[in-house]
Length: 137
Image 1: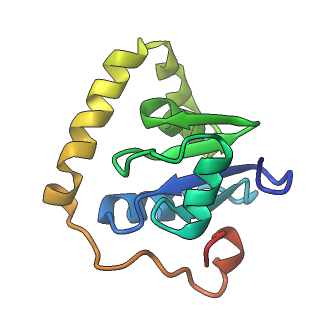
Image 2: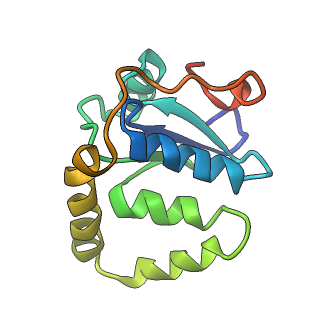
């Protein structure tokens, strides 16, 4: 299941300030509108994960649903970067790093994200202009 053939879906922790800022970062560098978004906590997010037989995915990772596959942690982040405008696709070269090493760095940030960046009491509410990019908006 993809986003109606439109591109890929990014599932993110909707109460994490770092995650919400990352969604804004992606939107600003995705002029083609390849990515759509849903919070992992939302009904849409849970249904999408369940459709990939991943209903128990934790909130400590970004999830990318692309081409019928599920990517998490560093692999999701690098695959997202390769679709962004500008020089960001160059980061995809880091895919040569062994996944355990890349995921260790990702995990360190994920474990500390609330302490460093805080959390919101509720999930992000998209602006009217961006509402179509949010599957649960």
